[in-house]
Amino acid sequence: MSLPYHCSNCHKPIPETKPICPHCFAVQRDRFTREELFNYLEEYFPTKPPRKPKITSTKVPIRKINCKEMILLGPFSFGISYFIYLLESLKALNDHWYLPHRKNELSTTTDMFVATLLLVTLNVFFIPFLQYTRYKKLRQHLLHMPNYQEDHPLPQKGQTIFWSYVLLDLFLLGSLAMFAFGGVSFVVDSITVLDSSLITAIFFLAAVLIFVGAIVIAVVLSRLEIRWYKIFSEHMQWHHKKLANDSRVRDHFHH
Image 1 (tube, rainbow, N blue to C red):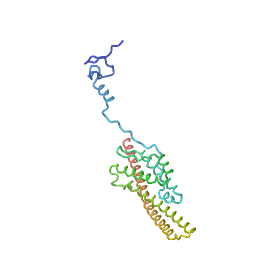
Image 2 (cartoon, rainbow, N blue to C red):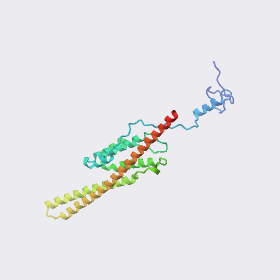
Image 3 (cartoon, rainbow, N blue to C red):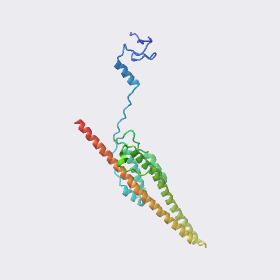
Image 4 (tube, one colour):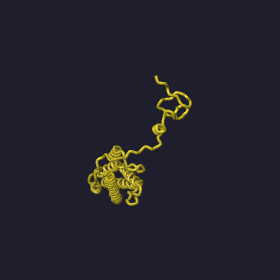
């Protein structure tokens, strides 16, 4: 039967694997070397920060989207192609984050399930929030990349895009309301003796003018959207060039 180990300082029993007495905290120099003591301290009280694992792409390569075609087909498909474009570009922004990034860069990921559900249920009323998310995430991500914004353009601010889409929704709703009021005024004029032709004309004229304003806003937003996708595509090309350069450097040192 082996005798229990005792501290060389306070003489109390201690575990045989402990180089430091848990009672008086004296180092057991008679049984442990300096290297064993340092290994023990590093194991239980590490001084070196853990290395962050390198993020590598495990996703399918990001598919290119025909931005202009999807936007132009939006009105003819009752907005379906435009909604598909928004979701696909949001997914591309998510997949982009699986490429190697530095620790100080901000994430570009968004919950795709929640975004799709809200877009389907709330329709045009959710688009300002979705667009705010896309523009803000890409802009903030590029701003936190060292020296990137000096040579590359940045997308519009998320707040500006948000209120522009809110204004577009208000113009569209206002135009529909004016058409509806004009239709009611026309019906009233046709079935009663009241002459409301002037009011009907005013309502229809207001509807046309508001709708023209909505078209102008939509054209401006479409141009900004094309610019957003161009900036994102250039950023992805920058990533691929950087990955190619890194792989060439690794191959050079391996050889």
